[in-house]
Amino acid sequence: MSWDVLLMRLPADVTSVHEILADYTPDPLGRRDDVRAAVTQACPEADLSDPAWGELSGPTWSVELNIGSEDPVDSIMLHIRGSGGDVLADVFRLAEALRCKVLDCANGDLITPGHTSGWEEFQEYRDRSLGPSVIPPGRSTSIRPMHPESRSSLDGLLPPGRMVTSDEGDGDRQPLWLSDGPAAPELWTRMHTEHSRSGLWPLLLDALDPNDGEFRPWASGEFFPEQMSSPASHDPGSLLAHWWATYTTVDEDDDMLDVKRRLAVTAPFGQIWPGLAASRETVTNPEQLASEFAEAFLADCPRTRLGLVAAPSGAEALTAVGWAGPCNYENDTAKFSAVVRDWENRFGARVVAVGLSTLHLSIATPPVREHEALLVAAEHFAFCPDNIWQGSRPYTLAAYAERITGAHRWDFWWD
Image (cartoon, rainbow, N blue to C red; front, side):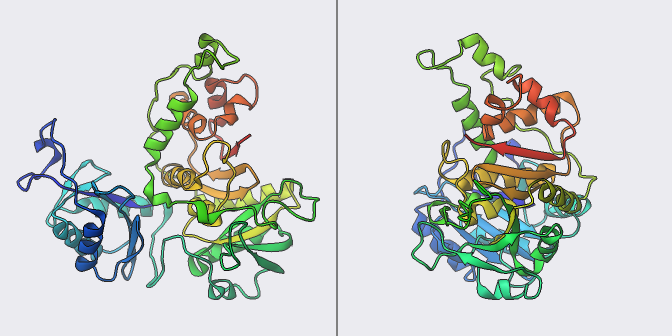
């Protein structure tokens, strides 16, 4: 879960978004090279090795800087994790260097060095929902290659296994450790508990054919981390709205359903994107629920193996390993990671298991009311339309919403 703030150019005398004229267009921050130079001058310790995003770490916090790939740069989104008020000094140092205002995306208004209650409110809400978050010194929340030291910290806990090189790699990109045999029932939980220390996220990996010794795609290296962007580069709300528009478009020349029946699939919304479902306070422990789901999944799929990926969360692990499950719809898994990361925040989602083209999440806070379930169903349709198009009868959003109401697991399958 992150506290997100936006650095953008606004008039110097503005202290609230309510003072901005409706037709005002912010000036860009400048050429990307100049913006990166300004960030380096303000915070020399920032890691800008990736041209599109950076990372800044403190004693108990970390900040991802979503600079983006556009040139000139319009704005920078900061994703802040951890705890401690000293992170705000760096936030405002960056804002001053870039001649920006700081917009708190949670409350929709500007913050200043003298009015920073949004950060305190975020930490209080997060700690109530998920428990205190502390990022140890030197711990990165970015997606990084797996180092041998990370795995060595788990000596004595892991079964026999090996590092797997990605299909597109040249031998030095090994994003996945894979167990040689099926995972023991308690193994996922044990590795999940160790994640805060090891930095390795556990995945239960299902194969195209578990009885095939090749164990595709995992043992064969059919994953492509080199082709993925960063999840921090994508806005989940915008992605879902775009996908919704794409999948609800009616093509009368190439459509098995007429217009009326096609729009009935996504009723009551039709072609109108209804927006994101609101988050609710989590009362069930997401980590405990994920552990229970992992044991149940292993009971149903006993030939599932364990994978370990260097990533701060399950959402980012999908991109870090280069999973290509939704490739028939979109080749950049980072976009799906961005949505799942948002679900981690809003619904207490945890990535537990992954197959060739399947994804299985535990959900701490599922929708419980009809309208809320319809909004979540709309998000699922945009994320994975095959869940409705090729799911259980009847193939409608309303029927699907009934099935996920109160459900503590979400399963996705892309054809």
